[in-house]
Length: 628
Image (cartoon, rainbow, N blue to C red):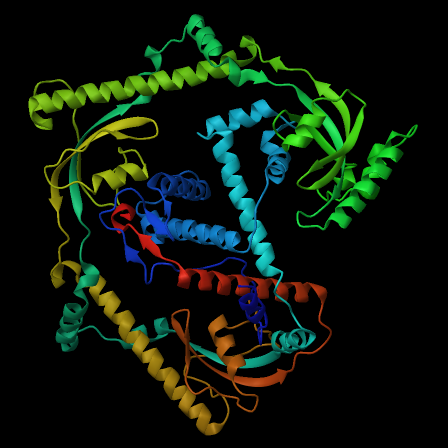
């Protein structure tokens, strides 16, 4: 594996015009199906991705998109982007990275996980990690410390894998010089833009081309096929209608507090500093003994009169994460550190210095700075949050019970219509609508749209739980997609046909202009189209004076002796003919920032190659039924 990495690291030319540090990897091809195997969504070398794991990742992706769109997504937007497929690709990629990390021997201990948790601002109060806040935040997000830290450990291992694979990448001086010449090259262009819109006036729509228009419509009529539509009958049960019925008594709040009292317990916390003399696990005995001797010498200095432990940590500690803070570990509770370290700290007195304490990381010298005794937040402190929690739970439960009772009545009545006729509920009707045109009275929830358009004609849904309501749906009628007659869409068809014919005229005009320019060995002017001349431009140039990037790309591909291309360039719904007026070779001294960009690109390419190797050897199976 390492020989493979070394070979892959020696690239011939790194194209770093735009550096993208994201591994884009398609796993779909070549994967066999798990159709009919209902217990997992995918399997990678026998390691399964469960539907629950996929659902959590999918919901996180949807939440992120909703935040970008102000809390709402356009109907069908997630499907158009293929979010489900993207989420699955990421999960498969993460599992391949994890398995690859196992192959190269990367493991993560509990200590870096604990340190990462302690550094997160969301779990801190007044700049210090707070265990109770940690538990509360995770609880609010339906997670436990065990599951959260397991995921965090996986993320840290992925980081280590990326760092390890990236460490094999290198950029030689010759490669950097070649990139400088490539990226620093400049050209000055003259070009003509032939916009189809300017040719539309030449396209006549009269009796002479009626047959041509009809033939064009017949060839392209699927473009005008209507979307499927549904006429929906439904019952909507809103939580807001039940809020006034729920009153939480103080006795209930007190009982809930007593029941969950452990949630409000803040265990004893200790504030310590340490000096780490790091020893690798596979270090020889002589090296280990040398480090221990150094630890004992530093310990003697630390215990000397008026010794500054923080200053000694800055001088000697190998723990880069807190060395500059004088080895400060902040406050932490029992069980947060590795066992030997944890046992030592919680057996010390304030001001005491202990060590050397041996752990898997090496030898630690520890100073206990402060102790916070165990506390329990009082009922009055948490009463308001308990009230909100119980209110939400009971209102949601009450709303669901109303929906469930109505559903049972519908079953007894035999249909939603008979249920309505008995006067037991107000059934609403939404006339024919498509997925893209949801009625305003329906909740704008992706789950609702998904449920509506999964129904068959005459089918009653289960109870659909939405964010703040429940719904029961009935597909009263369906309209399948229809192909319209030409007369029904005449105006739109005529407009589309004119645009296509104008585009053909623009393409012909561009070809004729290029032929004339090549004959004259210089760019000629076109009827009604101005010849624009740029300043010197680099490959990545943008702005109102620069032509579209595809034009620049083609211009830079021309041999230095060539001035004119062999064919026009199509970009931004127009055609371009250009001439290279002048060129400047790239030169100069490679800057450190550019070198780092090159290195980042090399690391990205190497990681992609490594993942490609893992994927080609992996057995990846996907349950396509569960992905629908």
